[in-house]
Length: 325
Image 1 (cartoon, rainbow, N blue to C red):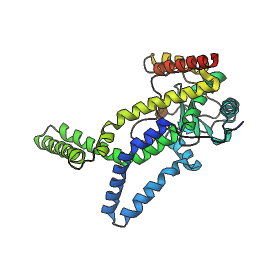
Image 2: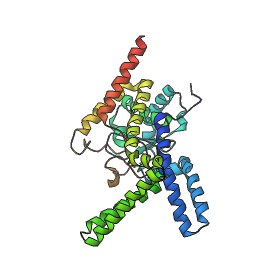
Image 3: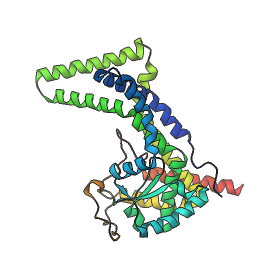
Image 4: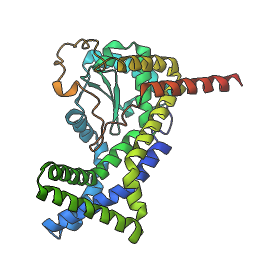
């Protein structure tokens, strides 16, 4: 039976959105100021257009462009689609989710991984596609479906988009400070020191004189809280997969992932076999996951496999205890 609600928003996703509000306000101010310097009329048009641009990431065509350009994904071949559809049908049937709500893609990478992107994309690496049996592949897909149903993916995408101007400005200032201090010239070091003092003074004024600690504090500790929320999102997606009956298969996947992580330079058991018509792994996509700070992310990066493994076993034991009552 297909449930009426195909996706929602849980505490981890909602917390990330709320945590992004302060840095989003800073981004809005930056967009307004920069556009106003160019043309006063743009100070009204550009900020409104920027605010309205966020939901565009959920348009199917925009999602496809993001999947191809940012995350190196591709549509599955007919042979890949046949196998993925069979496993996906089992996962969505257990979840009560319309299988057409989400699209399945492939990432040409050699690590054991999967990705939930934008609002409708679930992708698995070619390594996972060709090395995992159907039960474990179903567990991986169920985990990514848990990210979508919990709202983690679209919340992270919106949060990253609206925080992008502020983070870009922060990185630009940090890069300028690094350049100034590395000049090893008294003038550059002096300018770097003055800029650092100006930043500290501005933070002090905003936090204590203007009583805007509610803006400064979340921005300062935001990265730590975001990392914690990503960890919670991973645990909840794992619990979702366990609830669908993929607990043992997911446990096997995490054990394999932990074993691979213990090998120097990550999983290198040789490339997955290439299906006919599919090019060799592009060099730019043979490294770690594309998810990362400062740019649009496909999903929250997978947290430590051993920590996830402990959480999965805890959820499975709780499930057994409830069924025994």
